[in-house]
Image 1 (spheres, one colour):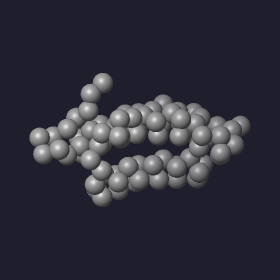
Image 2 (image 1 turned 180 degrees about the vertical axis):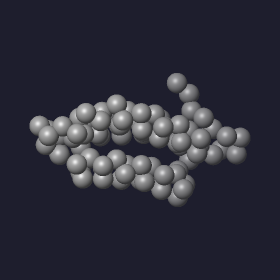
Image 3 (image 1 turned 120 degrees about the horizontal axis):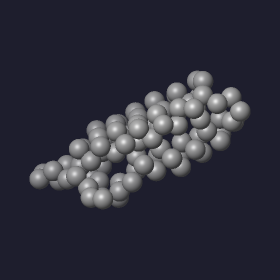
Length: 86
């Protein structure tokens, strides 16, 4: 697997691609989020292991800007809000 880096060093395309992949992982776990038999802390641990790890794969090579921080935090908060409001 390789990183997507623009000529100017921007990694926003890579971040957008990782968010899309993490969104796919999140949606595949929909039955887990809707389950009434799991505690919320268990669901959050599943989120961290299965979604956040996909999102942050290769992040050590990213040039992190305020915009990229905002995108990542927005995605994570949206997912957690969904999990916690069910």
